[in-house]
Length: 346
Image (cartoon, rainbow, N blue to C red; front, side, top):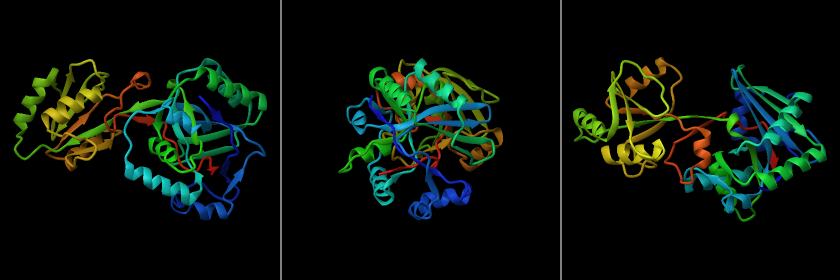
């Protein structure tokens, strides 16, 4: 896989405060911030960078570099779900207006011992050039620059010779948008190995058809389930789907060799609720997984009469080896990368 060092810009914390106001202006008025010198170069030459994101006890470390867009065109960098043309066009407009990439796409790569050791050794032997606590004091982002030519050459060779593919964890539309532009550019990216990322699931909230009684829905779900039980409380499981309907709670499994999102789309969305296309059907909503019981209670009240399904999250290995495009909102990769930590001008 071909990657490149680059000369990046980071926020100049002597001139700005990285807070909600700055973040909102970054999204809406990036060009004015750039003119006002809110960003600075950290080196006189092209570099690789290390990104560390600490959220509570979880620490994720990745390599920031540019990814040759041809790696995407040749499917060595693969998307794991479909993109939306309308969103691609919007991102193309943003790229043309800003003339910059303000957020790296997150790529998942197989674990590589030497690369892992290089990043961690460098991180602990050098000081970061940026440290930001955002959006809360418990989430800390740090960036290190790697400008040593020998180290850059070593990492470049590791990718070219030994890392043959990557999965786009976040940034499908950025790659697709850049690939279809008249003058495509390498894509600002951060590479994580499976140990540095985790996956949360999205809720699927489905409104039944008017002619579907609750008894009919439950009866159909029981028929397609290999295991079904009514429960008092939700218990996380690697192979069971949780269901909330008003005050009722259930846990069930779907039989089959496919990954659970595929089984759910086929047997629940399509067969039970007659939803052919999950991407654009108004009877299905996808929401982030609630973080506590009180948030679940609020969802129950807001979506009374709807069926709230919680799919067990896939793991990073399952996503890496999967060759088919996943149904929409099958994964929510963590950590999430925020805008503005590092900028690559086009």
